[in-house]
Length: 171
Image 1: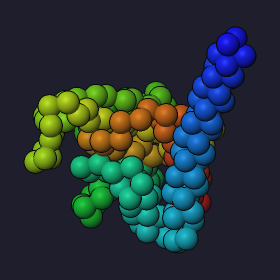
Image 2: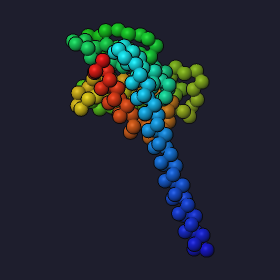
Image 3: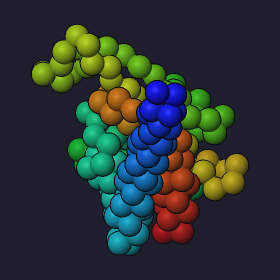
Image 4: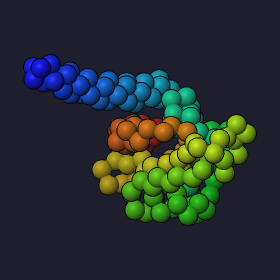
């Protein structure tokens, strides 16, 4: 009887480790797919659009905004094609991330978003990430109202955003 309990406990531990490895592999494959998508375009506007499209396709959100520095001004671009030049960053959270180099993650009730099929139980996440090379912030990406409920992916996204920063800076 003791052997049976030991085998069940061992089996449960192995299954737990396998599930964790499968989740990590899935997150890494997602990030690699996003990196591959942005490496296939050239030109600054196309790269920025590709970064936003990769995020939208793989993570999903109600909007994705990227603000990046160019000379003495900032350029604003969102996933819907709105592009404009800014003298300063108007969004206080994006400005904070630009200055601190630290990501911000906020939660809200999904019902408070603009989505029409929202339910009471679902959470929406707004992620604001710096796109950095070493300690230099090249750009900031804001992913508004993502429904991705797993925070596991958040530990892998900095690799994608750092890669995107390299591509943007080199365009």
